[in-house]
Image 1 (tube, rainbow, N blue to C red):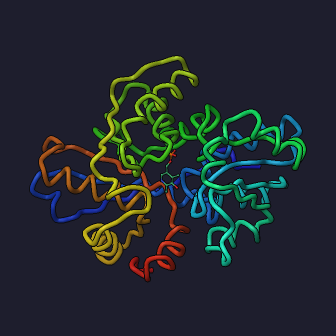
Image 2: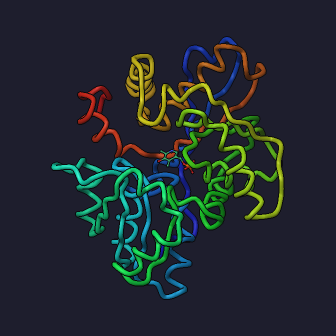
Length: 306
Ligand SMILES: *Cc1c(COP(=O)(O)O)cnc(C)c1O
């Protein structure tokens, strides 16, 4: 099963911007959790799979969009640890699968496509019952893998910090990873999340609930910076693309355009606007997601340098 403790390195990068304010920026290379099961998805799946196995489940079922890093990770983790996997995918089956879904099928995942309307009902007991009729008994992992077991896994990112920091920053989709970081820090540091979806403030409730379900606590050392979604999920502009390619060339660090690119762009922009006090030490968490670059480049025309 999953190795007990994984250690991912922390590096420091020195974009020109930061010198003026004497701010130090570190990157937690959690994209290196595993060669295939990428970044925070490894952390979030770990205790879900351990729990599924303990309870004797043979099949995992989960949900995601067609480019989902979570679907990719769940398919690969399932194949490695001996589960049959079913991915309920939002939207009709396309004629040609994108690289994420090609991989998922190669890992043995059965793809179950549902219309966008039907997908919205995915928490409905009737919807789950129909899936049970079709696929039998399964361990259900929610969309993005975010549940209290995921929070438990993400606490291990904090356990693996090399140092203490004034700020910890990360990209947010469902907010499960941020919930784990906040719970792990248990009141220390300030945590700044960057929702990649438009109107990300709905996450305040989701994240608070997830933390409460996990350890019954409430924390006030975290905030969401909702200005860096670039128009919504997988939306972009040239500033973002240029920034990602610049960081790759100049600092030898690859970022993905959906999550980590937006987050680090936001961090640098906030530094520029004087958001962080001088002499702050920031840790930006690289949550992985680099597999998504292939699909993004295929769709939009090789924008991201590989
Ligand atoms: C899924 C994902 C996130 C978002 O994680 P949540 O726990 O859903 O907030 C962030 N970064 C990357 C690279 C991801 O794949």
